[in-house]
Image (cartoon, rainbow, N blue to C red; front, side, top):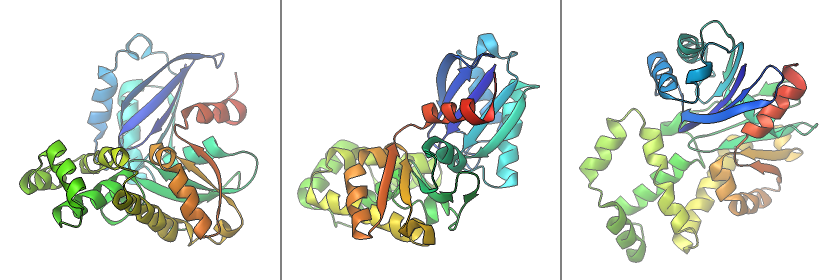
Length: 285
């Protein structure tokens, strides 16, 4: 059996194929970003998943693509966790950006962007992935992501920049003290996911002019910091992966037009396309 996984910081989507490459089942786990989980965490989460239980000794290949796995050190954290669960299978562990490249590849070079809990970008020519700008993660980077939007709305509320009607709606819904906020951010290993959870408020009020500006500014920052450093962006399509890209597609297209950039595909969940790429190019029945 073959496991193919696409992992963000919040969630991992798994598709399991039989030896004939037909789908056996699909399931999900928490995100296995090695900046926030250990090898032991990964193994324990997989052990808790009942879908895997009947097949755990049957896997020959595991293809895992995840946020946070771009360095060798972080790559090994994930691989050790997977090996502890899947045993003697052969493993491919790589960056979620590569999965995004595979999922959006339509036969021509393009910019590939991730906008989910976090954000990232690269240029993919069909063979080679190149990152012009390195990810600075949820504290220093992740422009345009769920956690960026969460930070922006939190900052607006606590610095009293938010209009009264929105501030009341925020306070009524969350009843969140500064002490509780700081504890959840600075004493929480899943702080990035916690911050991204406030995107729910952004979505619910996305037609309000104040919130519209927050979204627009976040997407402008993404384009400015993660797209414009690439010379190829001026003449290549920008393909997007992720829930944030899907939710705010209209804003992304509007911002891109301001920069005279062309948007190609926007795909919410890349797992189906990723499986298709593996069937066509990487594994044979």
